[in-house]
Amino acid sequence: MERLTEYLGKANIFIKRDDLTGMAFGGNKNRKLEFLLADALLKGSHVILTEGALTSNHCLQTAACCARLGLDCELVLSDSVIGEEITGNILLDQILDVKIHRVKTSSERKPKMEERAEEIEDEGKVPYIIPTGGSTSLGALGYVLFMKEIAEQSKEMDIIFDYFVFGTGSAGTQAGLILGKKFYYPKIEIMGICSGDSKDFIFSEVKKIISNFQEEWSIDMEIDDKEIVILEGYFGKGYGDPSKDMIDVVKLIAQLEGIFLDPVYNGKAMVGLIDLVTREEIPVDSNILFLHSGGGPAIFSYATVFSKKLD
Image 1: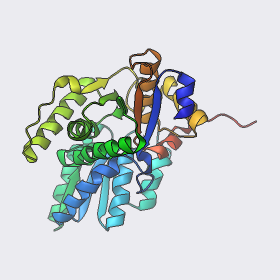
Image 2 (image 1 turned 45 degrees about the vertical axis):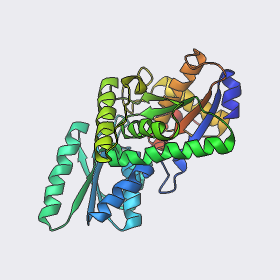
Image 3 (image 1 turned 60 degrees about the vertical axis):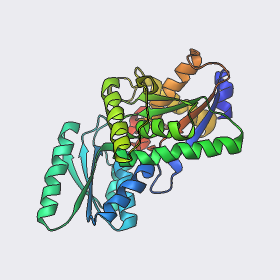
């Protein structure tokens, strides 16, 4: 990101475009779904159940991948802070014609999925539940192999990345990154920027996924708690809530680089990155790799905070 690097004048910033991972409008969840949906097929599943907020990119990607594989998909979606307008990811969900179940809060989503799974079994079909963000020890494998990809690309480019910065939420991506770092890129420092959940919650989820992964794959790998870096203070009032800093940064990156960051994860993660660079918490002349994890269609759901009247 040459123009952003020049604008900040301190560190060298690169971007990994996981918003371009192929299915639907792309995103990091495709790497997890590659393994989760393979598992569903191996188990003879007929219906995939997953959950998220109304604007969830994970849910859209799951629905699109299911369409490609000929699997039925049902989504359990909770209310969003940005209202009920049919646009962005929810519009794309409707184009895919997936069955949508609405609940009020995020805490109601898992019980609703389990209820639907029982009903599907009673119909003689095999359900397969994917939790929020595909964040399981199996899903994390997608980001273990991601670090192998980064190590290979780093070698090809003859660049050693010092820091990897990304938006963290349901913990699966971060768990996979930390495991992958151990295998393929041990010197990089991984920094997760909270998107709305508490630091303590994400930390405990990362630890749980890492532990389950090591148990399932019979790996005994020592991971210090200090390696699980989670930074708060950049998500504003909460998950999905549009902060002024996020709005300004999404506009800045678009105007400098021609790249659109989503308002939920990547916009807020970039707020964090710019702050860390500006305050030199990340040392001058470091090489930083930023993850664009997708979610682009969600920006249309935030039209009221980005748009202005035409002259």
